[in-house]
Length: 69
Image (tube, rainbow, N blue to C red; front, side, top):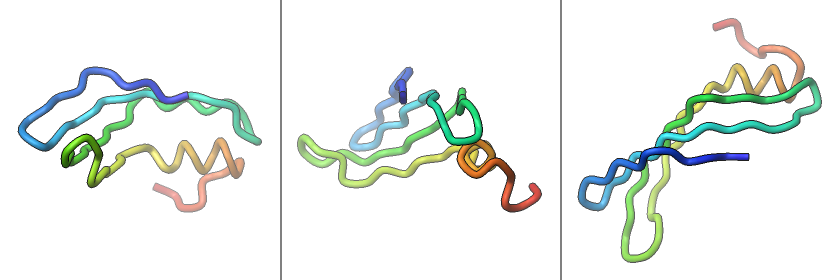
């Protein structure tokens, strides 16, 4: 489940803070901090960039970190 919080809009750009959670093969996934930066054209998103903790995803889905960070 992905929940968006506090969108910040400036012209055709929007930053959306978010959090996410769910079930994965190796345990629950709880990502308290996501960030999305998007560009809007008309009524649609024309670009979306997502920032997230990929090590947390690796652990929840694969059961281990692929790379030590």
